[in-house]
Length: 74
Image (cartoon, rainbow, N blue to C red; front, side):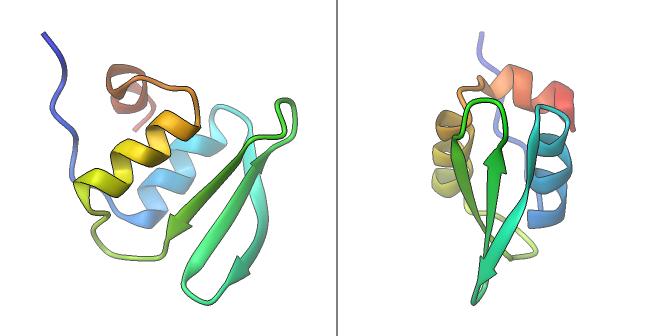
């Protein structure tokens, strides 16, 4: 059974992705761009109090994580 998507803020997503190697690269408007130094993958996080579920699912997919793995990082 799959884990439900958690309700998280941009800060929570950034902290979770930092645990798997993502670091702050730059910010353009309200979007924070993180880069994984090892894989060179990019994650774009909208700076919001609550990330929409579809956007969160896309961020998790871009980072090559599963919802279960992402939930463990929180």
